[in-house]
Length: 343
Image 1 (spheres, rainbow, N blue to C red):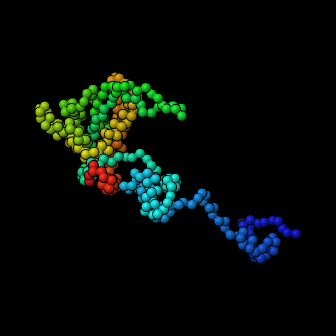
Image 2 (cartoon, one colour):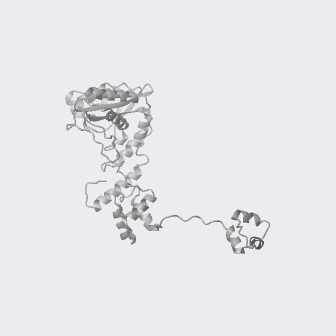
């Protein structure tokens, strides 16, 4: 009578310490081949799904299109598929390219614009001049404007419906806000002024007069808008130069390189202030002032050093990659007949 008992691999491994394969085959009434087969480790499970059509050099080429420093990262998936056919003779569909990119975690996303007017020599010079100073020795200044009739950008609605919100036909009165972040008595202080008209040289001069005297020499970071310098206009109005006026506050003007708002910590603080003002729906001058004062009061209790750290070190790791991006885009623009890119 045939024995129906079939030992598992673990049992056979233990029994082989006392019996030979031939003896076990006789005991269980099976062939020695069955005993050998049951002692082999199981094969690893095969991957599910069809094998990728894009492999080897073709895969390397496809992934190079989506590289951070590639000048081809603006291609569509159809254009990538056509390029694989031209370069490697590999005919694949747009859907195949999409699957491969998803598998390698390459996604299509909103572009972060890099102004082609940025001059990296000036950026590197600015960074070399400022990297040895402690962050507490900097101040930052900037301006932004708001319309009273601005509405929130997000609202709730059912999943299959649009979020409809009434929007006035006119934007309403424009208000300009000047913000300056200073270090005083071991803490960060934000000075803010709301102006119901355009900022000019006189208004900017009056705002600087209201700033606190700096306990140690402070470098005031600001952009290159005309009234931040305006030496001719100041002379015409009988005002001291920007350098002379700031010297009375123990401050030194430090202008950012052109087209680099990301180096200004005040820009980051303005983003926070603007976001919370939009949420408050400040549609009157009184409500606007209340919302700004509330936000400034909250920020004055925070340590704003991370804002300065993030802004001043923004280009430290990106400068090399951004140079490559700019060169690649310059070459791409020349190949496609565009002449507005300059190195």
